[in-house]
Length: 203
Image 1 (cartoon, rainbow, N blue to C red):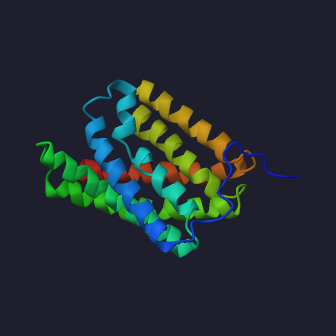
Image 2: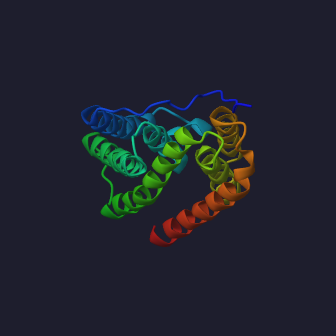
């Protein structure tokens, strides 16, 4: 019996090192730049697409799936997240919106943790579409929707959007990995709680 997928993991990674580097750099900077512009145009629940942890962890996951090794996937995830931070704050500065150094440090620290983790998850998804890695990205959306948007902020429309995205990712990445949500969703909730705690103490 084969694993049923809606989105098939790439059968082979990107082999040319220059192509891998260009892909990670280009995607990371582009998402950071577009996030800055998007915040001026997306309102309501849709604003979360350019103002959330989960949205910035999508690229590291799929870029990680394109890397040849687990180490490369972790490095790609880290680089993509860090470059999203760079792209965002450089664009914001050029648009006349200055940010304090503490915000840059905070989100860089988040990138240093979340980027490699999601990059490794993407790599694991490519190797084992029915394994734990397939559930990590959906779990991020479930956790952020439940804890950050529903519990902490009371943004129930955004929470519903995030849960819907999480469900689509869960079905799309692998229908045979659901058992792993018993582990990854609690871990995601713990991560969301930690981010909220640190953010509230720092700012």
